[in-house]
Amino acid sequence: MPLSSIEIIYADADILVVNKPTLLLSVPGRAADNKDCLITRLQDNGYPDALIVHRLDWETTGLMVLARNAEAHRELSRQFHDREVEKRYTALCWGQFTEDAGQVELPLRYDPPNKPRQIVDHELGKHALTFWQVLERNPDYCRIELTPYTGRSHQLRVHMQAIDHPILGDILYAHDLAVQAAPRLCLHANALSITQPNSKQRLDFNCPTPF
Image 1 (cartoon, rainbow, N blue to C red):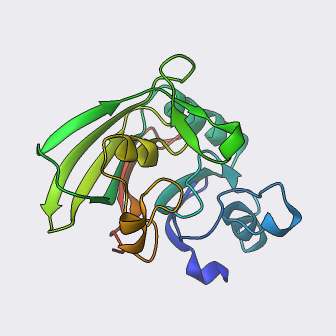
Image 2 (cartoon, rainbow, N blue to C red; image 1 turned 90 degrees about the vertical axis):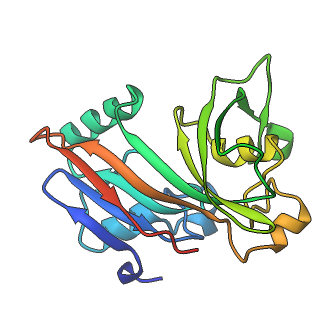
């Protein structure tokens, strides 16, 4: 997959904002055959200064911000840590939601015997909170806006599965009918708001959902 397949949404001296395609790692994996990833493609094709700040899952598409120098990296990392970054996702979720909006607050932890899965664990899990809103209802699924308050690994996928509305195409967490209902994981980071590290201007980015 050439660099041209990675859409550059915005670039300045401090940051890059890109649209990550599906089936691409954000950073290199441990195995020798998992070295192809977003960050190395960018670094090898015109952006050697690109630095990873956050990640999207291999199957998830959408907006990612990268730093282009150490100061920008520190400031963006602080914004994520202090929850000053606003992120919204669009997902297709199985079944019918009884309400139009709500939240899921269930603690999560890594499940080593079943890597890379995460599980709900009320004793050992870390706090995780997701807000959801129905955008559109269809016979077998709903289009949902997901807003994570915390940023745990696989948070949106596990939270939706935990309330019996798994994301379509999610081979890790969804049941067979939901997996077969879509050719890919239907999760897309469609909106991102950050503060430019140098100018301190608030920047809002949007990326159309491809499903």
